[in-house]
Image (cartoon, rainbow, N blue to C red; front, side, top):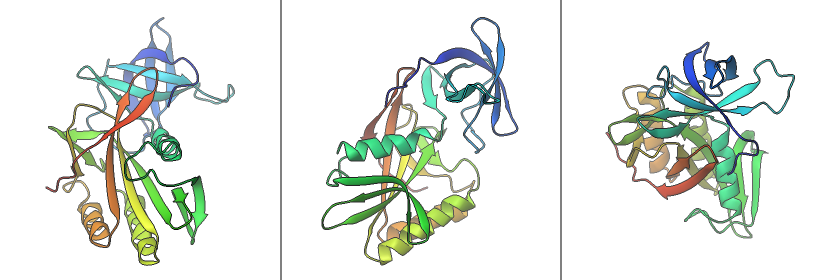
Length: 231
């Protein structure tokens, strides 16, 4: 996924009210950017760190920029939670994810069986329900999800369990938008209910795809599958 417009460089002043971030641009101008990430963003907030912003599609929007990434310990971390869905959708359409490369009909944000799926992939013999989550938190070499309690995320797991029981293939994709980790796991101490819910989902046949993404100011590309480890 390439950014359609050049990004604007700056340094982070602060993130506040969950969805706002003040950034000092290279020319000294201070702007307020929209932060799509509603989580704690633990391991992703560092004052005076380099950031990149994308211009708002609507020039009349109150916040003229969207915060895309931050540089932590020399590595870019993608924090825009709207990007993973598009990344996974495009990759499945292009058949570039091993294990998810056999579908010729791929739809985003589709209502299905009283639920709204991030992606529904189909061929003549199979339907695959896919939910996508953005991962930015880490502990040592492990990427962890979630970074805050998420009842909505747990609900999505229950949806996948239900659809799996109805005969669909069910897949949970975690897009890890940082390259300084080598494995993926659940943040049990932050949300034990979600951690247990994922174990329940996997026992019911829901598949887990933790995919590492390479983030740069030019774009974001999906890379390798990381091993899933339990704490």
